[in-house]
Image 1 (spheres, helix red, strand yellow):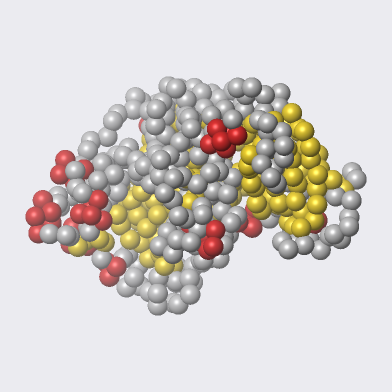
Image 2: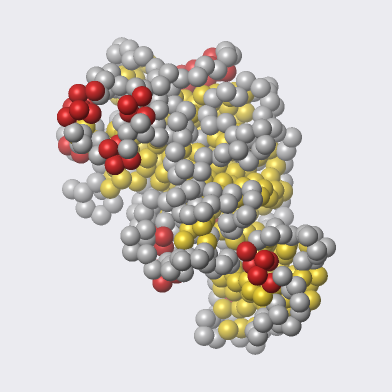
Length: 514
């Protein structure tokens, strides 16, 4: 079973013949194309030449788009468009069109826009190869220096960053049956249309046509780069068949290890991850729920019920360099991503899928929303949302946040004296706890689930950290997960988000305390 573990690696794109006539264009054009595709059987796309698929990582990375060939560069527009060649991970090309004056014109492939690692690869490069995707640039700091902030390439994957981020986690157009025994499908964006921006533009609109075995879809993206980069997403989906687990607005990330896990043997860095937790905001209950991520020993899937989800995302809350000590990877600068549904999506679940990974090269975390009962075959289905990429505060939660989570043996000094128990520490800060009196009667509502036993719990203010600490001693039932949820309160006032955590039997911390 696979769910796209190799980072940004998917190869389900489509080659389409290039016609150079311009055609009148509007979003309905893409919707009509998606509906037409869904009305016929899906066809596997033709592949690019084998030698491109078999390139080494170094050789493929050495095929570079020349910055001076960037579209709109000569017009000195605020946005520039760079192109990505097929090869290695990207086995198929996509069609790219440019929109100007309401008309769309296909963009022809030009091999001279790329530099090559050697003359042999350049000679073999087909003159009509096509593109694997595109990159958008924008001058964040200096009008003469363009910064890459958005990349679309590989199935329906895209990556975005805010002004102060390095690339990390990915978004996707759709996820299909992620984590299920039946196997995951990877629908692809097979065609794009990009509107030429004006000289004063601070946002850019483009469109995507998605196709896959189980569905087709039309997307409109309006992207605004900045300290926080936002994508306004409109999607219309046409299933070819009912989909058991349709992942709307999926996010994909990496968690190798962190403060709530053991450090793998031989690793010197304190933590290694692109994201450290999932945050969910349910509109009906107004609960904010935080789940720290984990690197499990086997695939795990958690379903968080929502009546009217108002937001969910994978966040990198820990932005301190000292937490990672890795100047090359820069994990503290990886972006967080937050999805805000537009309108009421109805009843459903935010699903968190976590897979084991032996290192940091695999994306092993996926989060998305899915409707109750799956996605019916009768369409269309519309899901509109805003995707935000930037620092971890972009979710704008009003509650105190869980900023640190630690687990340890409940029989050691500082842990307790109960055999088989786990000491669980959660530090909260911000929100209503900001400048809260240290003597305030802050208490916790804590629950051990899965027949576990909550042996003790207490809350204390830690002056050295200016945080409130919840300490719990929990003993999981035999051969059952360690499962806990808790939040801070003062009287009837809820002060914090709900911290929830689960460790399957056989997890690293549980193995240590046996």
